[in-house]
Length: 121
Image (cartoon, rainbow, N blue to C red; front, side, top):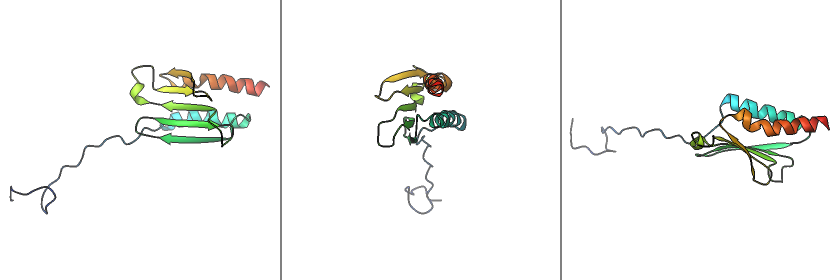
């Protein structure tokens, strides 16, 4: 074999590039928990639409009262913050942080309480 070969020429071996995570996503259990809350909020008449966004840094689930408005709630997963304040954040309608944490259940608690109030009314 000729040792003077350059990469890209026939017969040369090119190393496969290292795999880099392309985007952050929700795992099945996380998505199930979020969609369960969404379904109950729809049944209570609070939410009517949702959107999901997946980027390199974060996965976002946004719930809307009406499609043309800003999201009423936004659940964000940022794994880079896992060792700091927690990778989960719940944002309110005006972009304010309602809750941060390491566990999804704890972050969804304010929305769960809101659901209980909506059902009681």
